[in-house]
Length: 307
Image (cartoon, rainbow, N blue to C red; front, side):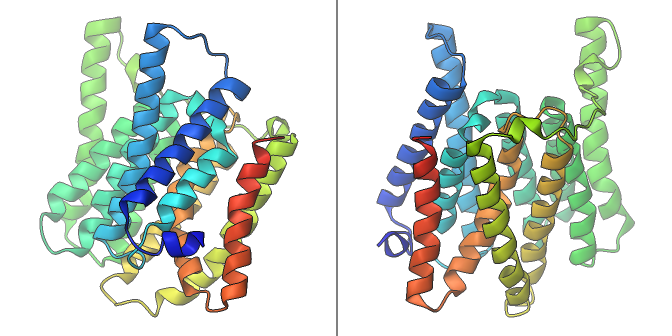
């Protein structure tokens, strides 16, 4: 049974996830993309896949390093299944890179639970989110997560509240400097785009309707139990669980307001949702219900492949 395979960390788990992620890429290229095979396009596509797969591994590292689930790789499987569900995420390399940088920032934010190098971690988080916003402007929403984390970790020192802003300003100043040198202006490299979009007609297809229903229903159901079980966690780890849930809320908001709705914006949602659902799966005591839950998570993405 697949839940038993992913109940412990094994090399085969990473092979399965690699294969599923590669399958999602092939579907995106052949079914949704306009791809012409050249040496340059192949190298670019390989780099996109590598960045996305590294994002999956980074999520697993964050979970393992901060004890956000039991010993296992369920979040790896879920992330790769989400890629198959909405393979269009591969079509925008800027969002893939932006999401990877956001995950690096999330790693630094969650690691605030350890009592060392807080200033450096906060500066890094602000810097990384600022860098992510250069590739996708609305990634800047995750900057809010830093200050929410400071509240959750009960940090009151002024210098700790200033550090992430300095990190963001460092990106702004470097971007302005490069804009002056390269484009002879001040803001072209800042990628400022305040446009939002509430036209959801792009989601009016069987694939998107099924995919969004799956993510929404499973996500909301798992979130109820995720929030309920936080109080059962060790006190030192509770803020980390809350940070993940806030990241889920911010990601959902980002999807809603995304000016261009082509499916790639859902990538920001995959990591926090994978962690939340994997935590819920671990709490299910009824084997029959856990089996049905996991089978549905497996079956829906695979069915979408043939639609």
